[in-house]
Image 1: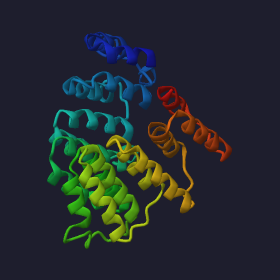
Image 2: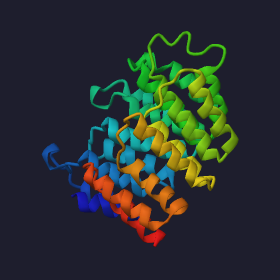
Image 3: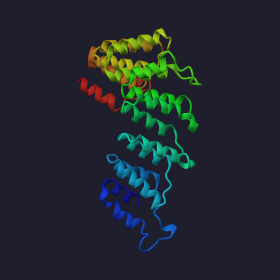
Image 4: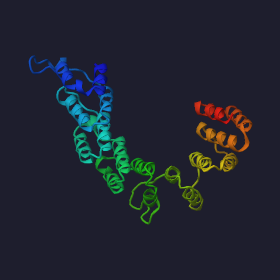
Length: 298
């Protein structure tokens, strides 16, 4: 059955034929027990096949529900909402979210609204994304998770100024009603500036974190070391690594990969290999990226 659904997702022209094959109701009605037992994973897989045609995706979604009596889940709704958002069909997306409310099996979750934030941000509809965040309490989802998702989506699509204003502007989260992790928010914004390639803003915000008394963590240093490498200042990334060691911040494989690349570029491949050995001795196993980094440095 699931093989057939995957075939439908790659061959939309087969849908009417499959309709007759799977749900033969016109000439010889079948008992309920003979209807196809579609799984949420199979339906999501089929919807993914229509990712570039929202109308066919919506047709398939409705076909599975009405003709095959499939009870949609939060995951299948989310997959369709993502496809609709890609084509800026936000009114349809919201109509689906309203339908989701009526069934506990498909009630909207944080993934639902993370998709909406992402699609609004990618369409440069920042105000709509912020308004959506303010509606989360209607769905029992008000809290720091939705707020983090909004800030992350804005930064992902380079609306960093808006994210910075949202987090550190004059209103500064006065009416949120919950606490947030300042370091986590700052890391998102720092990564956002990184994505824009605006190096002076990266440095300015890095220094601002110190002025605001934000305690920088592993992720802060990992992001900024990557920034220094991208702006062709690998020796500064090495200095950050030494600062992390002084602060006894334990590195993970991602941070080590950045440092290995920085050391290799600034001091040579022998030093990078030496650092790779140190990494292993400290119980952090290299991954494919580590090995590829060493190979490129040779």
